[in-house]
Image (cartoon, rainbow, N blue to C red; front, side, top):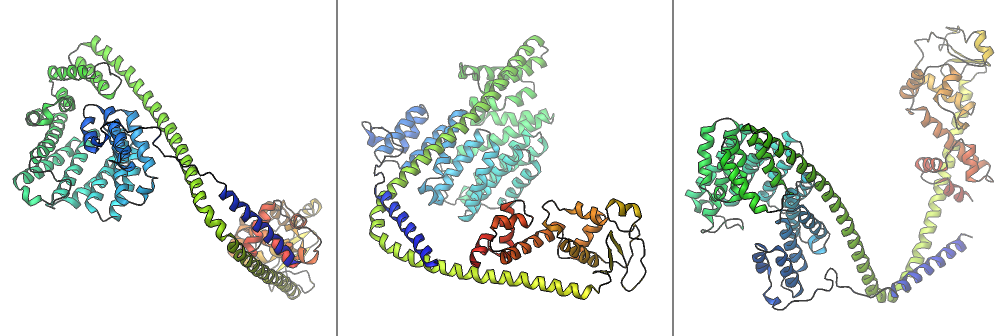
Length: 633
């Protein structure tokens, strides 16, 4: 009989394998050029390279994107290289929607096979994602990517790059509200990089100090800005005087001609931080001293640098100079006033007019500031919705690409499947028969062990009852059991310490313990009685049986019963004991009444849920009730 069932199953399996094999043979063999669409190479495409794209970007980002497309088509750029350049172009355009595009490209690249297999490409993509999220001020997501990037650097043994990333992580932590942890992270980076006279380490240290100065200004910790900025100046002075001592040949190190610009850039940053800090600390003389130094740097002479220092100038009362800067920025913005820079201008003008007691003008600018701030907040929310929608669309596209790849894979594998299918079927048939036999044999042995264990337990209980019950009504633990309830009798004492209950309790059909409990009664003795009482009365077969039922039947308190189970037995709870009794009873029923179905056994054993019955049975006995019943047939 079992052999016939096995052969039937084998025929079904063989049929399924054949169907699968022919399904693979008839799969689509259409190959698509993923991601390229209908783009056509342009004339002079051989001139289109990474360098020309980046040169064009400075004046025309749209033109740069077209060059990147053409360079990819003619093979001057790989698909990975082209996507990285596109993301960089989007990241440098200072618009949230373009940041979103950069982020989506990066997220897609993280699933690209060439990125998964190349840790250095992973570093490039993660750095791109971190910076794009930082520019978009999505600091939680930036922290996510930065953490992955730092871990990858450590795996690759790039300690300095890992520390550089840790400084970024510190700033993100601070900006999401975890200031103590964030500042501690940055200080740890500074401590580990300090004293290493190599350019890469010095550059990473300057970046960490720069980040610290920026977040200290943001969080109004102006006194902490000063040592960080002065530390930057000290490093730059040392590097300027001894450039050969710092030479390490790393890719970040500037050439001899680029070195003065590098030093000037970071000096300008440090002077700006010092001027801002001293201005906010009301030390105007020092603030003006560093402001004069800042004005001599490249940053102090270009418009973006002067706009950055405008809050410091406002604090120093240089209102006319600030208004000139605002006018220049507004002219450059033209009609593009829906941005954070214009919001800063409105706020700055309002504060200046407030300081000059020009109330009506200040009020008008504050009103415009509030309106624009609301618009920008709504735009941020819309931008996030756009990003989420774009992510969903990108994931749908990715799934479509995966489906196409799977179809192509089926076509390539179909001939192999047809060639070896017969051998696989034969081997599988032998394996299935052998496994079926082993499983059946194992289940029979396990079922026999379960049966013997339950029978042994029953024999043990019967023996225990015969020893403990001498016919006088004294049960385990020294209990006197009567028809109306029970009272407690200490072991070795013929007199009851208290009456079983009064006549009113007897008439009501309830039972109780006397209020005065004997000190000699142990938790173990009480558990033994309760165990026997529940089993003898088959209370466990009631699906609604619970601790409250036992309290009503015995008159014991909730805590007393709980202590008996927790301290006097291996069962911490009543439910554990009831579950075990029900499972043992179910086994006995299946052995003694084999005509009952598993469902009938479940209901008769007190289980209200088939899932609970199956799960508990398997957990206790290592097989399901159905498997146990089948092994007995």
